[in-house]
Amino acid sequence: MTDTPPATPGLLTLAEVEAVARAAHEGQRDKAGRPYAEHLAAVANGVRARGGDAEQIAAAWLHDSVEDAALGRDWLAGAALTPRTKAIVDAVTKRPGEEPAAYALRILDTPGALLVKEADLAHNADPARLAVLDEPTRKRLTEKYATMRALLGLDQH
Image (cartoon, rainbow, N blue to C red; front, side, top):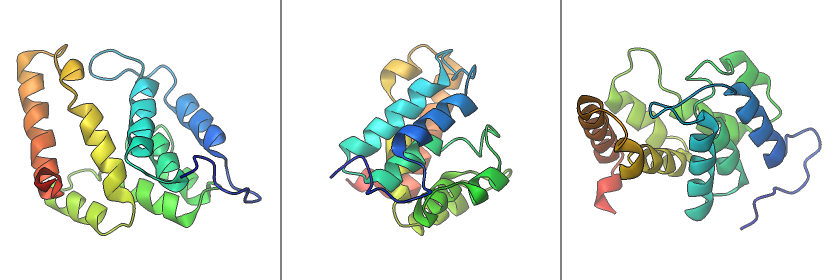
């Protein structure tokens, strides 16, 4: 599987998507204090390692951009991305007040989104990342990620 889609006039390349995502999250840190772009790269690499295609890798780079308000829904709607990439980004974007079951159902109903969310959860739940957090935060996040994995059927693998 190739990381670079066939040249499609007018669409962003993976390198351009990566640059947009890195710029959108510039200066942002994760809960452990690490540059947020490290998480984006880890999720994109996780999607690639799991056999994801270029559209899924692009979505991985952008998976938190709308949710974190780094880029808006209007940007996503008008972005030079495939409809599938946009649908995956939209599917993995949590809505304010949304129940986890509804969020999981949208991911499961969107072709290609589960792989992106699986890579995201894998990096979020990495014991090395969690180890630097205080105990209450580590416990809360571990339970949150386990619940989402169960809702997505990922614990059956």
